[in-house]
Length: 419
Image (cartoon, rainbow, N blue to C red; front, side):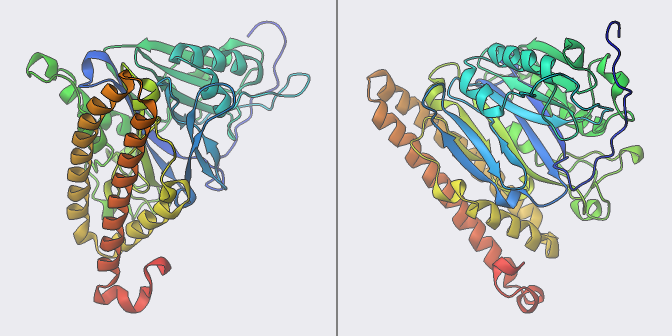
């Protein structure tokens, strides 16, 4: 670049001790979606951090209410606000340099972005202005995020290879009336020059892309067009051509060089720890913007609905009680993989029924909101979220007890919490 010379770029080796993980995600917008815009991702962790996750509903004195994931090992991430702005995150491998500017570095936080952004475009502008000056706050200095609202979506990418210059990031969008998929590789041509290797996750991204475009053009053939929420959820449970038990033999769960592809990964060093989908409606975003979240590995955990309009998050989700149960279930099924398919099928049906119930609930609750009965509307949503999560935890606890009670585990495992 011209002008002020930059310090020499240095490679930085990332380790599993850092919160570096592999993710696969997508945006579904406009005519490609059955109902409202959606984005989602599955996240692969190298260390079982997710079992300690807690979900918070933050209502700031100024600005918009939003959800926050918190974890003592990973910090916090904020995925959705009451304006229907949803976010997912992805790391990139890149050669980066330390911050070179004068004065104190001031990276905008996830909380600040979601409490201030009433649209995806405003979110992008706030993020872009800050990243231009200070770069990202990520441990490895390079990453990306998908952002969506009821109208459109964006892919944002950045690498800390230059500061005070918009060349350190790229904005793709607006994305409308289409499906967009990506993983842990740069899309922008300019940022490719600082990417380490060739990037990661091409086969994961291709697998998710094929699953989604298979339904993208349903609008030409059916009376109910577009990709449904249950189908989108099911994509994050996909095992592709790698059986979970075979994946456990490899660190990352698959070898892309060998043509392996799977979305829900089962490696001994990296595995898909959770997934989330943000479903944003066209109307009443302050009530019906919904975070559908798995509290464990997607194939063994259901997507649970958490509406932004609720009064409080269920106790099992705002503590780490739910996440611990689903992590225990994952470990127990490793000893008895013959139950994996049955459990996955059960949760798929559970999700379909939950979505059906949520559609009816939204119709009834919208009438209350339109008649000025906002408190009653929020209570209806709160009760539904509590009921659905309680039912899921009850089933998960029973499944865990049944598996641990099998002869080969009973003597070794003792109580379920010892697995």
